[in-house]
Image (tube, rainbow, N blue to C red; front, side, top):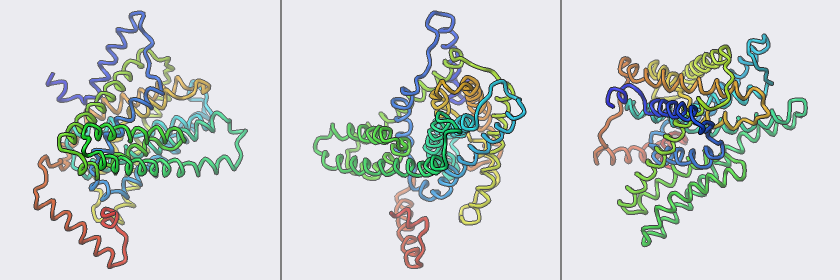
Length: 428
């Protein structure tokens, strides 16, 4: 239906279908369909993150790696503590109908800070925004998921132990685990990327096997990281990004096309299921509707993201050749869509946290607000602000050769000057 698909993002249409399906099931004896957190994290999330990592425009990512890292790590930590602290301050005046502890609200603020790559891809690919803006928002959305899950797990364990039973050593260990989990996940991703690259190199004659390893080894990286309590999202994303460089030369063109379309199909199917279940759970979940809590969460999400983006861009612009303009900062603030990750995390909150029904309702409300209102209005805003669009054509042979030549020349210049900059990083 052209009028609908023209103005509504795919994700919002899928939620509407899920709502309709949920209503039908609710009127029958089949009600109660919810998404299990194990199903979400072990089966639905890996294809989406692998797709994002495998088709990541690596050159653009390496050129903007400093800003992506700042937005995904510093930005997520800032949002988590700012939102959590503000909601905790409001709770002191008994404005909310359910009580919660400091760590319980930090569990919620960690998951609600997750900018979702599924929702960002769904919206930003439709509006064809320029690569610089896309890579900063999407790169942040991809890597901040790893940061969010680490913070979420840390605060969840603190909440279950209880603040009165925690020592200074526990806090120090929790802070240290943040870096260990993220870097450990990245290391596992690198190891499995090397394994996948070597495997496809030595199975060139057995062509039917190569695509199997391309899917199997990244998923093994994800499961391995999950087993040893490291960041599985970072592991599979890094694995996908690194192995792509070598696999393209190790497999036939037909196999490369098969991998491309099968990966896209898996990711699209997972996204469909997640957004459908989001609509379903709106009808079937146990909700606790607190208008003050929902309103405050929405307001703080928008406010602190905007403040964080402006401050971080101001600092980054002092050290970058490519500056973040005011319109870029606005779209980045406005493009902070919440979705599958936040939903997956909120349904996996332990039942022992009494405020869980209020957290679930508030999370679904925030997702609906960002996917529907921001997702629908971002396209007219991009057109109105005359944001530069992505070029649809592929670079010519001359442009490709010149880009390579420029990369090597500039890394040589940096080496002679004794500097370690973007081009040295790109070359490595």
